[in-house]
Figure (tube, rainbow, N blue to C red):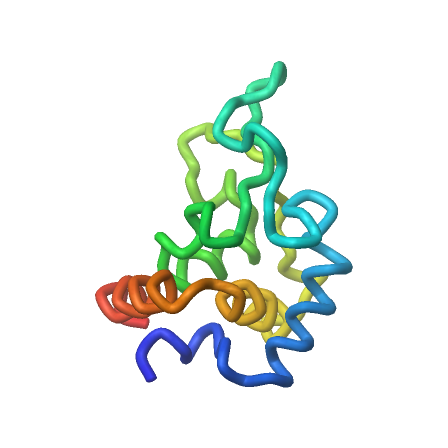
Length: 128
């Protein structure tokens, strides 16, 4: 189905792998329950935005998988460019491509049906 090719959120084994990798690599900043850090829309004293939530209250599902994977691979600052500052590192070389996709599958598997529907449409429009 459209929207599942990059992050196979219906595949139980992939989602289980993603949950494990998320817990080990992402939960420290993004929260054990995908809740993000407090005041995630407000820059801190150093000018950085706190880690956003990946649950339905955040904006992860507003972006196509291709962009999300690029952020995980290279880090937010590299993807956004133009001097944007972020504490989100790139995980290329630390996580495999399969692990990165699994994390996104895990995250997506937690969203309510309407967010998944919208995200699938975003992926379709983005060619993914």
